[in-house]
Image 1 (cartoon, rainbow, N blue to C red):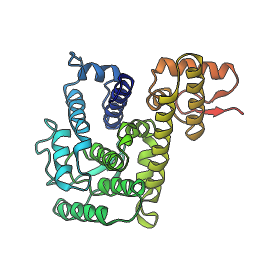
Image 2 (cartoon, helix red, strand yellow; image 1 turned 90 degrees about the vertical axis):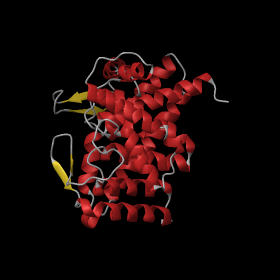
Image 3 (cartoon, rainbow, N blue to C red; image 1 turned 45 degrees about the horizontal axis):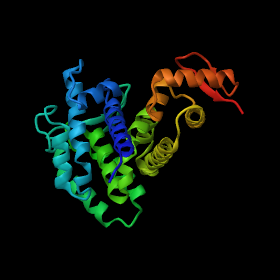
Image 4 (cartoon, rainbow, N blue to C red; image 1 turned 180 degrees about the vertical axis):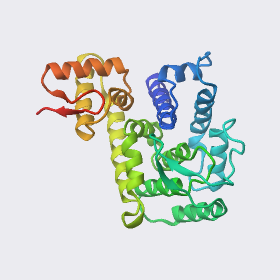
Length: 295
C-alpha cells in the first residue's frame, strides 16, 4: 500500500506535469492555482486556461489505463484533454495546421488533412512493430506525431502525453516523473530540436533532446525523493541549479523553478548564495545575458 509520502509526491508530480505541459502552450496558471483547482477551490483566472488544466487533469488521470499502442485510446485521450476547447475533441482535423514556436515563428506546415488518418495508422503500425528500445521509439513517436499534427488543436499536449504513456507502460514509475515540466524549462531547446529535425538529419536532434531531458527529469525526481529537510536539502538544490545552468546557461529563474519544483523566491535565494560563494556569476543583462558556473 502506498504511504502518505508516496501519495504526496505523486500529487506534486501530477501538478507539475499539468503546469509544464500547458505552460508550454502559453497557460499562465501557477502550481498553487492548479493545486487549488484540483482541490475544488475557486480559482480566479482565464476560463480557457482553467479548462486546459481540467482537460489535462482528466487525460493524465486516466493515463495508466490507456493502451499506448491503441489509436482508439489516443482519440479518447484527446477527447478528455480538449473537452470544451475544440469543436470536435477526439476527432482528426479537417483543415490545414502548422507548428508554431513560442515566438510565433512557423516551424512546420503539417500534411494535408486528407492524409492524416493513414499517416497516424502507419505511425501506430510502426510503433507496434519497432524492435527499438521504448526510450527511443517514444521519442520518434513524439516527433512524428507533431510532424503529422493530426488534430486542430492540442497536438503538443497530446504528443507529450503519449510519450509519457509509452514510457509509463514500459516502467510504471515513469508516470511519476514530470518530463513535461523539464521540457517546459527548456522550451526554446524543444522547438529548436524540432526545427533541426527532418531532412537528412531525420529526427535525431529531437531524439537527443528528449532523451537528455528524460534523464534530467529522472535524476531530479530521484534526488527529490532521496533529499532530506534542512541544510542538506538546500545544498542539493544549489548543486542541481549549477548542473542545470551548466547544461543551459540561458535558463531563467522561472525556468529553474519549474525544473526543480521550487518557488521562484527559493531559486532567487539559492542563486544569491551561490553568487556570494563565488560559484556562479551573471554575464550580461537580465534579458539577453547568461549564467556562468565558476569552477
